Image (cartoon, rainbow, N blue to C red):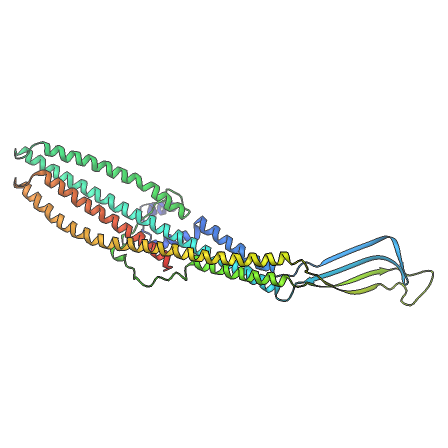
Amino acid sequence: MLIGCFLIFFINQPLQAQDLETYLQMASENNPKVKASYAEFEAAMQRAPQVATLPDPTLTMSAFGRMIETRLGAQEARFNLMQMFPWFGTLRAKEDAANLMAEASFQNYLDLRNQVFFDVKQVYAELYALEKTIQLKKENFSILDSYRELALSRFRSGSSPMVNVVKVDIQRDAAMIEIELLEEKRKPLETRFNLMLRREKGEAIVLQDSILPENALAFNETDENFDGHPRLTGLEKQKEAYEMQDIIAQKEGNPMVGLGIDYSIISKRTDANPDMNGRDAIMPMVSVTLPIFRKKINAARKEAQLMGESILEQQEAQRNELQNEYEAALYELNSARKLLDLYDRQIASSGQANKLLISGYSNSITDFDEVLQMNQDVLMYQTQRIEALKNGLIAQAKLDYLMVR
């Protein structure tokens, strides 16, 4: 009974609107693309310990089927242990290169996460605009009901033809279909939004009006600077990594030094007893590689240098792309500001004109078609205003992504 009471209590509670920051946090923690990118970064972090360690030592063991006689006795078995050491600084250079590539992978993760944030903001804005449009259409439907009652009352009094009632009915039917279509449009948007958050596609999304205030369209136009953008920062880390690869190739062109020991097991002689009879032989060893084949070294250096040049070109291309996106988003934002001001003035003026026309129709001065047309004009301006607000919010979200705000 107690559990049932709790369930009834929670079911009866109204859904609480979640602010946009909460949804963004959910996306950063749950979005599969973001999680996959972060896993790639963590995998890249495991590269440095692999390349910064010495090569495995080599142990060679040999046993003789037929004894090899020496002055001190027969040689029964032989063990050889050798450890190779790369040229000074090679391992550190490899570790630095791996860490730089890991940093580039982290920047890719940041960029992907920011892109997901932009997508979440975009869909949120579209849902907001859709809800406002549906609300506006329903309010207009109520207005059309009042117009129908007015036309019907005038018809009954003999001061207006029945055709005016029919005209209102035509607009009411069209308004009803528009509302139904808008309601159906909500589902794919909610599915997309929930999947980005890795939630059930049918889970409710509660919007908060205050999260998208009309005065939110604020962006200070400053000298655009994309140096801190993850796209460019990631490419810079890659360029530094390839510069380190060039250094690694130079160092690998130097000899590798190996230190080891050779241990032989000697059995005692039975036919004589020389000094140190049967004593095992221990011999220190030094090995040096001879990197005389320079073609692969030169090719490795050339590869690193060409990749560095490629990164420079990619940086310029990315900077141009960011600049183009910035200019387009800034244009959309400024357009939204101007259109919002325009639609505010048009809505205010049209509202006044609409009241005058209704008053005139009530006094048999104004034609009913003018009343219907002005109402449609007011609705059009209100709808366009919501669309302009949505476009401005999306443009602002794009600028936030580009300027890493």
